[in-house]
Amino acid sequence: MSGSKLIIFGGSDGAECFDDVWIYDVETHIWKAVDIPVAFRRLSHTATLVGSYLFVIGGHDGDGYCNDVLLLNLVTMTWDKRKVYGKALSGRGYHATVLHDSRLLVIGGFDGTEVFGDVTILELAVHAYYSQISHFTIDV
Image 1 (cartoon, rainbow, N blue to C red):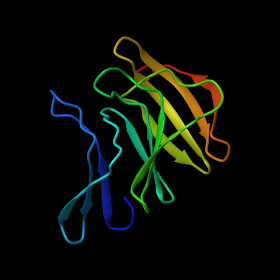
Image 2: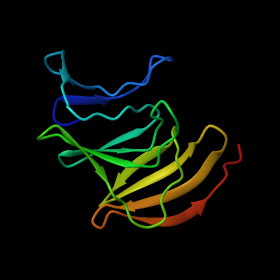
Image 3: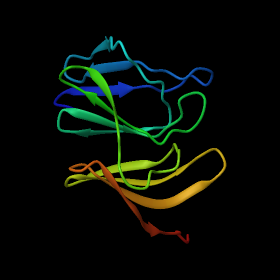
């Protein structure tokens, strides 16, 4: 959320993968579709608000699992596919991404075959991944 605006990107209806962006104002209860000329299809991704950017990591584009980092500039409503240095994540969806200070922690995920239990840090200041910092299991 940015202020009273909830930003929704992508998703699926079970048959098709979407590339649309919607903004829902929680105060006025009004939905607005955003027309963005260049679009990326995505489902099972994460979308994390960092300042005036929405960082979209991984997910499925309808053809396969992705490992890219997309930035939606919320001021200009334009996309940027960000080059990231270091050891790239393997393509994945159904992961979690958490913002901590100037870092995004990417946790776990699934690539259609393998379930990941890793944690990788994306250092935003230099657009670089730190290699895996942890591998864990949870005994219940």
